[in-house]
Length: 436
Image (cartoon, rainbow, N blue to C red):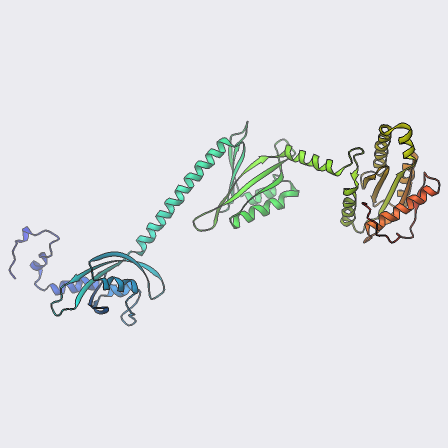
């Protein structure tokens, strides 16, 4: 073969250099396409019919098949071939083994010296790893941007919100606290937090289980909420705090951390308890109001169903006369003194309420009958009144108990006032509501 150029005039990438090595380019081509990792296919296109003329080994490998189970041409590749144009494109296909992969394909029509049918050369490379890595990099960049934004927000919060910020990392069981208090701007990390919080009195024992349940739930699934609990303070004692929390989910769908803020609500809780107490007690005597006292008594009995209980109905004698003769202001002082006396004599393990006007009710727990009667006599010695006493046994209806004690109290008045009546026969049947 004659050469137009000398060896020195040819560039390193010029294919004519092959001619200087061998006249048989077919051998070179066969070696190249048989060993290259790029899939090569030569196709004949007639209208919408495609015929494979040549496929190298890498072509089969890219599709996840072999020469014995070659299927129809995958639809995405078929569409490109039928286009018949010079084309460079990245497509996704499903391999024979159901795995999805990305292929970078290049199509080039070539001349057909043996007929009029269109010939198309197709070259394809598997770029799945590259695309997946690119996608991972983009996701990492997105996550990093989110983390930077979150970190910036966290710093702003830490600098501007008075209180305690926290972030719990379940992967390493670590809790980080950032303080923004007038005399404390420090941060600290507690590792092994799950066992630490159980072994150290950080959270009051009454609230520890609820605290632990909330944290465990927040690391299992994306959630948010708030929790009020008593927490230990330096110097001893506990204060009420409220924690606002929210799970932070990573790109893998799992909770990466639990973030939140803790604020001191001790003053708020004390005020709330004060208002709750004021709503429950009689403003004059400080005893439970009648709407509340029956609830308290019922709960009292439920908590100790096998205990010994006695219900007392106490009615001041001749109180109307006192009011009429000395005025309501003096009468109020009598009621207050009577309430204090009843509470003092019945002591702590009892519930006492003002039923209304000059009537009081009480429920004793685990005080023998003889002692209850003695205490009733002591009350009468210090407060002119009549008392009806009845046993409150397991399963008894509170309305029936009330009417029974009410009957006994009136029986005591009929006996001459200033006395105690205990009738163990049993309550009368009644439809009366004790709160009416």
